[in-house]
Length: 203
Image (tube, rainbow, N blue to C red):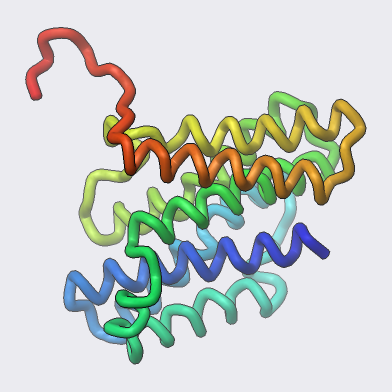
């Protein structure tokens, strides 16, 4: 149950971040919904393709797609309120990233993936939707920025895998991994933590 809840909350957070960018780019309602839905379910589709789940869960059952679509519509009609109440595109992206990293890793474990594969699939699930969103609106993906993004996702996924290996309950590993991934991403944003760039490469 917790896995399902985290998956839906992550979809909503990612869809909202995508839809907000669509609003900022002055897309029409269709464009906003496309960006929001693809951001919300894109990572899950990539995860399912890697795990050999056909058709992908988000396309075969209604809750994931409908959650992303309804969230996008809410942002379209109430984006000023959403912008005031929410934590911004980057904050929503951080929350979605943390939720998807852990849920993706647990889903991979549930389908028989080994520790390494589950960790990498969890991280890929977390960053996939955001990359699709940025590509659709012609922005450099957050994944390629200097600030920490993929690393928190990978650590969150690894936490779930290690927790499983140590015999922790799935719910405990999911909760701890989500806090670690999202918390590290927030700290990186607040404290401007960056990975090093090549020496002499310019600003």
